[in-house]
Image 1 (cartoon, rainbow, N blue to C red):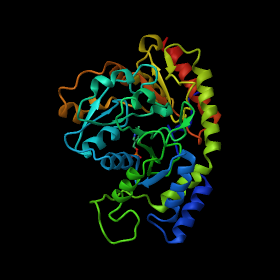
Image 2: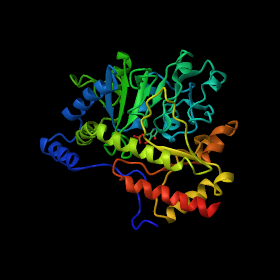
Image 3: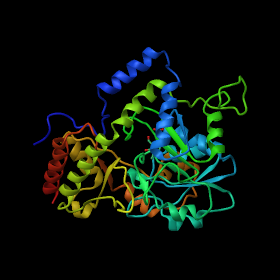
Length: 371
Ligand SMILES: Cc1ncc(COP(=O)(O)O)c(C=O)c1O
């Protein structure tokens, strides 16, 4: 039966604890960066097993500052994936450099490491892989190239690559605290790094003052990219709730895996058992021939069943600005086909098991009708 209420795609799981924490922050008098942001950095450094964590205004700011900290600028190239939120490529443009898109692999739609060497030139200053949906990229062959790696770990706060937590493995790792993320503050971001110089540079860049706050002086024309204590207060509670929220997402993944196993033409992206997947998004791929509907038709049909879905992501190099700015961009066939076939199903600790059953029942009904 069609639901009576709309099922949100990824509503935040916020409770009285977050509300109390915000009220406490407001009562404390610290509206901007203060002790709660500092505590978040300390606790995240421990959680991510990294030497430094810097709290910033967004995941986008985290990546932008990491690029600037590495001195990436005009004339430089940065290799990245087309299957990402445009922020990953936009920050390269913001830094004055050129994004170079390399195709993804079929299994998990992460950067295909076999294709990266051919894209490396003497101008390549960094590689920015994205851990799509929470599945870590194949990092070993990327590190072997000896080029600084800035990971876009917006989806990967809980991921581990071959048993090692993401956060202290590459030159810099960038996380997002956006409203839908595993640790959600509404907005916010984090950079983690074991590199003292990168940490110091970002400390100086995120606010218009010296990183140690001791002097009214400027060593670099910094940005306004600091994190407010009000948001840090929410993130701290979300961090405490992570085990409980992870367990709920885990259960939702299991329900989807079981429920979709017998439906022809709809398959989840591959998850590598050697890694810890952050279970941030449940992305399926639709084979229109076998399913009987295209991805767009299925998304519309689910909408009619009052089920919200999303797409992660449309290939960035095909978006208008990138198409017009880089007309010589060659085709990236795996990303382009996947862009028309992927769909992200509702997933959130705020959803109940019944909510996920509703999605599965709707998918079965739509599938039967389409067959
Ligand atoms: C893959 C990816 N990278 C970067 C970002 C940017 O993070 P923020 O929204 O915190 O700037 C997002 C989403 O928000 C994302 O999904």
